[in-house]
Length: 168
Image (cartoon, rainbow, N blue to C red):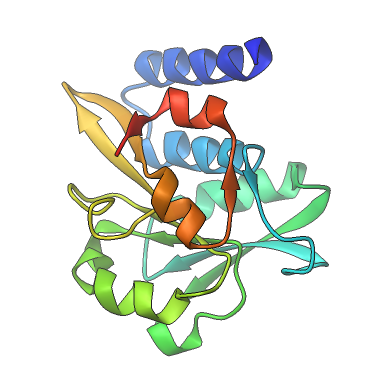
């Protein structure tokens, strides 16, 4: 638990120092760390760990950098961009940039009953079904986390991650 808190404290500190750097790097690092604290069913996506992004986002480049040097749950990380809702297939994480947040109902219906961690970045989306939502609090990047929404997606979350987020 101390190690997990240390990692998150370091990430928060690094993000404060590097405010001039892209916020997408911060989010990508957190997404990678979320993979260590969420449990997917063993049978889901057995060969690769797939992070899907619906639409355009600067986070794609940062996630690709991470995928070249890290693994998630001992699996190769594959980053896929989806341009349409219908093309979203078997992913472990689905990142919804702010430009697509207006489609949250349709997106959640599309991934319903699938063990997919839905991550968003627009105010109020955990109340609409998102599992984790990036928010700014007094100028600092934080994340809201909804334990019930994560469980509704058929996933398990560590209590340590819930403690680090803003519980919804």
